[in-house]
Image 1 (cartoon, protein in one colour):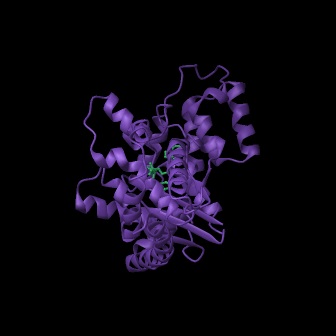
Image 2 (cartoon, helix red, strand yellow):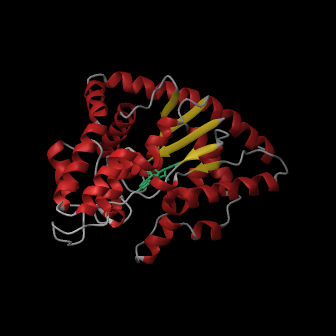
Image 3 (tube, helix red, strand yellow):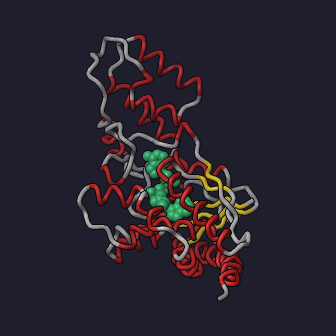
Length: 320
Ligand code: TYM
């Protein structure tokens, strides 16, 4: 079974990326064929600075490896190192209906804001479909915001198979965990780089603490009882803590006498503890950047072999 997912290097990774996606990458990496990639071609639709793109791509690789992605088990590569995927994108584009792409949220949201969208943003879901279909992927771990793109991928694959009367592409399934599919940011909305409400995984401790302290809460006075279930601080704490720890904090909420500041401090400490090992291993990896480059190169080679096989199948089906 093939597990595959991609992540854009459009900024440093945040808790939404971690709980919504990266943690699942790591849990699923023992599957015989796990492929994970840094979606630098997708990032070109927002990052237009070459130095920044290179730095963010390297940071993405370091972050994923530090968080536990094991290159002995999973294949890690950079999207742009597999040109077969961009060729496949064209083949898919020829069977993709405009109306399908017009419904996609990234494009629709931009147009709704009165902004001009470029063709890259409009056809973004077709490149994503090629990313998935090029490797006969079965399972795609993602957060809720990517579910629509997975449906588009299945639509395109089915249409291609139908037109060319051949099972060229495998239909992928999403792997979306309900509890973590939409992690809230500091303002209670979905955590997202574009909403400026993110809490980074590897931010310096002082900055990180400030971020946790800035989480929006209601104005219930310290001495009064509080409802943990409607509080974003508790919502985030649940992602880190085991049942017993969750119960203990919920009791403190309900008993009254605990201010939100205390709850935020508890959450901050828990996050620091959770990522302590990853922080240490990231520092070590930073000393060996050429090893990271080697991992990406070896990954790309492996990914290309598979993508070539699928691309040849698709070309043959269309008569190329
Ligand atoms: P991207 O880079 O925006 O996000 C990477 C992953 O993080 C998840 N995520 C979240 N999950 C829960 N709560 C949140 N607040 C949150 N914010 C982000 C996303 O759902 C995603 O799984 N188009 C993709 C990248 C991509 C891709 C692919 C993914 C390109 N090709 C092929 C899967 C398969 C994207 O922009 O993700």
